[in-house]
Length: 261
Image 1 (tube, rainbow, N blue to C red):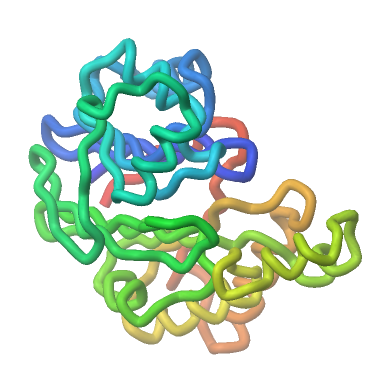
Image 2: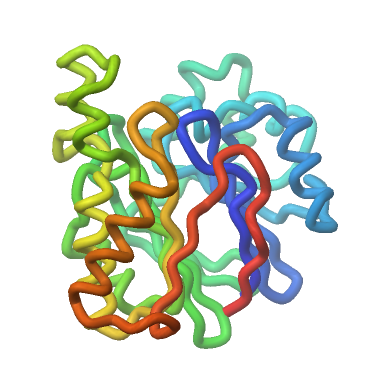
């Protein structure tokens, strides 16, 4: 299985996944031109995509759905809450262009099996995805206030986990955001902090997971150095030696490197 993030953060999210003859995008949070350019950088284009899976209806995940639905034929898949939000906010999207999926279900998209799991976020129908093929598993879990037991179970079975490390608590609490927005982000339907992410990764390492990517870093309340320092520091304090575990960061506005598991 091959995968890379095309974008990751509050300004837009999109991840490319491929196995065999199947190519999937998770989210489409940039305009169509930008997504096409990112795909072309890795040798593909939008007509090559077999399906688009939406995690939830916030604009940084669904920004180009109206245009994609009108120009291309690939199924656009999401939960009832997500698709209902798309129909309400994205304009003249034909309902027939949208494919309903259920949480806590498994779907087959070409050569890839997809586990859909709910995530606690402040919008109805928010989910994450766990992709498996040929005995390998990739789990993408972002935009969640905390890690549920069900999410953790899929994570710990994974060869690679893309997990949210959204904010540094000090930056958030002492930054420009009003108190109600700070409370929303820190709530159990908000986002994972660097500390939350690091604790989860350390726990996953004890369960045998070795490869991670920190994703969806806030542009206003986090930095790459702070996110990486928190996770690496916790791993070192747990006795993990260099080379035993890999930790990468998803770039915000450019295509990340291609991973293969």
